[in-house]
Length: 111
Image (cartoon, rainbow, N blue to C red; front, side, top):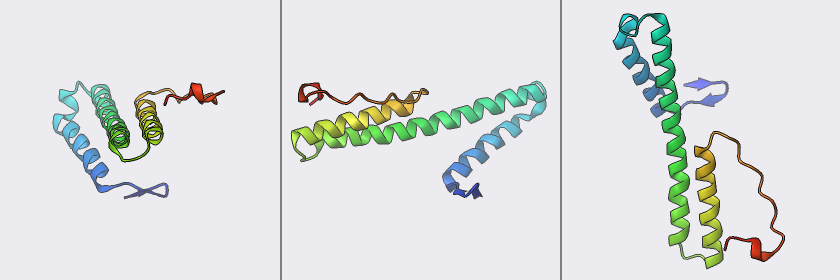
C-alpha cells in the first residue's frame, strides 16, 4: 500500500489488519460503547508502535555487538559499539537525542 509517497510494507499492513480485526471481534458493546472501542483502538495502535520502536532498537543493539566481535581495530570497534548503543538508546527514548559536545582532547573519547 502507498500512503503519502511512502510504501507501507506488507508485514506492517498485516499487523495493522490483525489489530483492527482483534478490536472488531470484541465489538463496540464488549468494549463499553464507542468510547471503549476508541480507548482499545488507541491501546492497540500504541502497542504496535512500541513493538516497531523496539524492533528498530534491537537492530542497533545487534550492530553494537557486531562491532565488538569484528576484526576492526580496537578504536574502530569501540567507536562502532558506542555509536550503535547510542542509536539504540535514542530509539527507545521518546525525547530527541541531545547533540554531543565535541571532545576537547583525545582523553575525552570513550575509547
